[in-house]
Length: 469
Image (cartoon, rainbow, N blue to C red; front, side, top):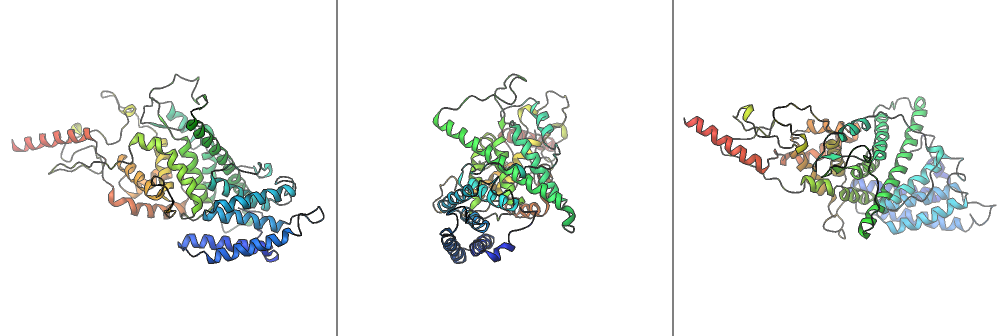
């Protein structure tokens, strides 16, 4: 987060910041160890607040004694702690105090231009509260933190080409171009970290600055896109949704029925990946609850369209089995008599015997990747949670398991290959994939539809007749 240095050395000189920092470490340790004992966190939070209140009797009263950097860091850390453990009322109170302190110092851009470390620390507190409480960011954009890594065009061109194909109701698309652009930047950050040379930190100073600035910029834009999404949801509930021009408008006539848009899914999954993998936040932290619930809400349309929450009916004909390599082909049947494949949207089925080139699986893999990222969240179930949104992990695991069945993803290597087609942070993703695969692997079976059941029965009956003759 702070490639220019660290404020940890300054903690030795500031009592409030020291206690706040220890409380933050204790909160992260409790989350990683799944401990419910908060005595260490509570003690150091209390000591930090006590020291802050004592200091406020002396600092900030006039220009001769301004608010110190250490006091600002301490309050920013308290915002992070409360957001991390899900104490949003306390986080809101500290956020209000932090905003007042920053304003007394002349604002985050002008008042703290002497230290990008402080600017990043304040911004991280802002992002933490905004994402945990579904609120807009408080502080303005900081231009000096706005440099960006080079983009790779890994998704933009592929997505545009995929959207040019004839698409039907059960097909997937991403129509928000800004979401795709942010995903490109997140991919650049991930690849830079994958290839980072930790043995020569001094020689990679400039690269680390760019990565840190890119993280700042991508989260800023993600927060604003999420605020637009929340506003749109509010308009829908109020029955006053404004008519917005489509990304594709003017290029070709509207398609009916329209494909399922994954733009909001991509935004929230990217934000979760940023917090979990890039920033290294523990998967069980309460701070992920709001983003996980937002991702669940954004997934409603694709999950209902593809029917990913229903338990699939697995059909088994006595004396036969469906091949795992091709679930649409009955064992013992010829290739020409094979059953249709288990997952083939109507728009992808070739007409007659005309061969059709394989379509890019980008959008399908984005949905798969989003379900995987959601499955990595392991926030403990809250007693006051609603029945629908209570167990986030179980929701994502079941949807991922059913989608793997639908797409005939029956082994870990195939799943890893499709996830790597989207985004993959090596050490983190490998560990999380092992955990997720252990949960879904035992229940994976080929996805068989009712139509395939009839065809399979006919094929087996024909084989039995041939054998009797």
